[in-house]
Image 1: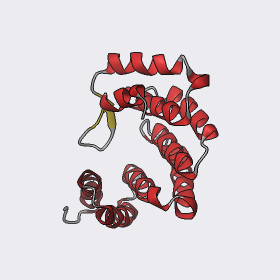
Image 2: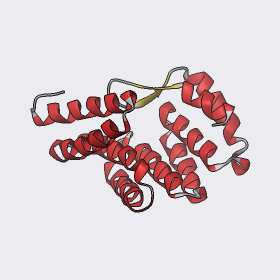
Image 3: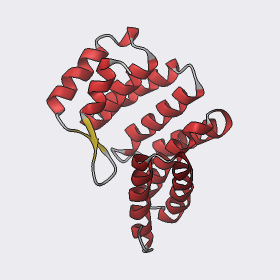
Length: 178
């Protein structure tokens, strides 16, 4: 991860609602603009990270443009999965759920076929989408599958993130939360 990517990541946090937000919006905006001034020279991961920064800033149209370019530049299945997930988020956050869903579904298909180590990320984001789309029963199924994968990985932060999302889904269904 480049220094700029690291700085962008450090300026993004996840709220109680599971969505990304900028901890220091002005600083993040300056850093993302700096990166995008070099857009044609950015490697795919750097371009994708700038797109994520734009999502956290609420600049969804620009995020979609940048993330579509990152998807075009993806050289590996893992990069395609990550770009599709982020592009889905750039649609989901402002409520464009119909546009987001096929992006998450495509990410899941690619992960299943070519990048199984990224499948839990695709399922996690699709599960959050399903909560937003008011399909909490399916969200519980998808997030339960993601949780099983993440428990096998053993990363406490990933497990906690999925448990939080699963609790939101279960609350929407009226089930006991974890």
